[in-house]
Length: 84
Image 1: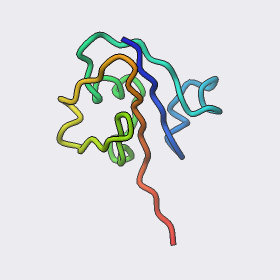
Image 2 (image 1 turned 30 degrees about the vertical axis):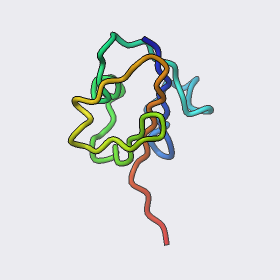
Image 3 (image 1 turned 90 degrees about the vertical axis):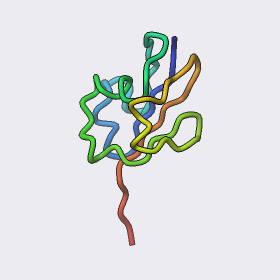
């Protein structure tokens, strides 16, 4: 199956250099892959994986190891953001 994997803010550095400008990469994954399995090869520090959305819907931390992705999904991840 194919999904779009997007990383935002400081997490874009974990994407391949050619994908950083658009902050997205197309992934080919085995059927039944989970959010956690899609993220694992990129070596993201889990303390920086804050906001996780699949097709715009929030995926809580406790569901990331079991939430299966399907063909065409868009997986987007943001780090914690501070501001004032």
